[in-house]
Image (cartoon, rainbow, N blue to C red; front, side, top):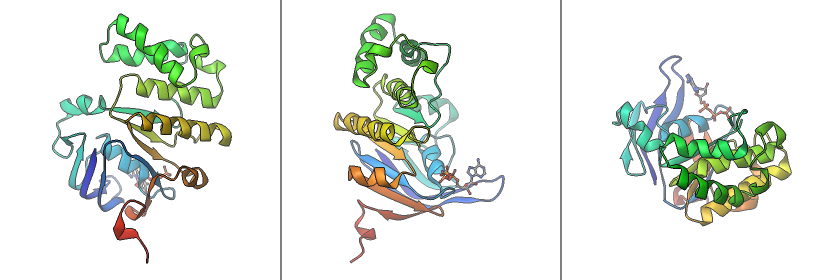
Length: 228
Ligand SMILES: Nc1ncnc2c1ncn2[C@@H]1O[C@H](COP(=O)(O)OP(=O)(O)OP(=O)(O)O)[C@@H](O)[C@H]1O
């Protein structure tokens, strides 16, 4: 669950008001698209959720943790509740697909037995069981993004956060990635996707939050934005 109460973010280095008095709630199990023009504040919104940035004012609760007061040492506990998918995949090129996903489990101290059971299951889920021994360079963009998704999912996070997950892949593959995220959402994981792809967003019929110039200007789940 995510709750923003009157959140503003001003970057101290240049005085840019990236978010201006944002209040919203995203419930557990929702799938939400965040859209808006370049520079609107979408990445800042995600960075605040991940506690990569702190708000200048307002309060933020994510998965029952109060982020504006959170000490640095506690951030890893927050991050363990979320799986993050990046536009540029961020896979380790020397490792196979299997190892890339297993590595995420090793990082949180999982034992070999658990890894051997879980990684093949997750690779099957994202449709990459037959690519387990390939290296990222041998895969298409869409396949690499599916590895990145497998890695985000393998520790069973409460939510998946995807920042422009289709930015580096072709339109057909993009649809497949969002479809996969939608399947994952149906299994109970909260999914948050930042994207520029309006057509894709429309075809899924999910909640859409539009940010413009640091403000939420439309939210399909919020009655305050319904125009009569
Ligand atoms: N670390 C930073 N320091 C200073 N200003 C920043 C920083 N990050 C973002 N900004 C500024 O804050 C505003 C919002 O940026 P943000 O990256 O959140 O937008 P965005 O909607 O994600 O854009 P894009 O779609 O291009 O990624 C922009 O004016 C940007 O220049």
